[in-house]
Length: 303
Image (cartoon, rainbow, N blue to C red; front, side, top):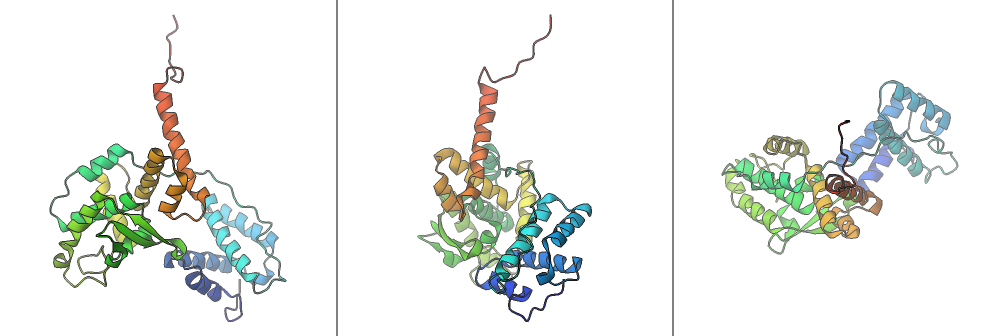
């Protein structure tokens, strides 16, 4: 797909729109860029010449090559976003994505840790190792405030107010929200902040809270690997988003306040939050199945 990026409505201009106006994260912008590059590699026509029939054929081709429905949905979503954005520049052109069906897929419920697993993780001794003190603070803050990975690594000292009791974060699209910091997370943070400057070989980068030995801000990958190592303490998978899911599920289970959970998570649409009602019901159904005498299945030996 040839595309003159010097003309209004070009790919480069679209990516700049995502960065500057929609304020999407660099990782998200890169994902859009990859998806559009894949489209360009699959066809020699320009985007203006792309038809629904051609796009449907490309979807079929990628499916034949082994793409999952989830990958195809994400790819088509990027193409649709670009097509809708281009309509502002060339409104007379037809949108090639309008008559392309979205591949269906199973909606999987997010994985969460139960309270026993979290207690095993958070109450087990982390010792005096600065790395573990830092990791413990990350786990406590991630679970205690329901942070995304991108929000966790971006935390600065200046984002805290009221003696580390309130944290200001900028989520997707640069949307700001203020979050309470629990007493346990506050204690873990203060313990880390008391030692991290002496532990770093170089002065910490700006006022980043979670840094490596050289003072640089931790990368997404570094956090994921550290959490993976902690998973051995609970004999389970462990990643930042699992802690965020656990935070939301446990708050909703205790309070039943879906709107409050939406605000705490920073979801623009409450439909994104409603998945946790399914988790809550799943938990209740499990309790019912194992506790109610009319729900339990009994096998009887034939006489």
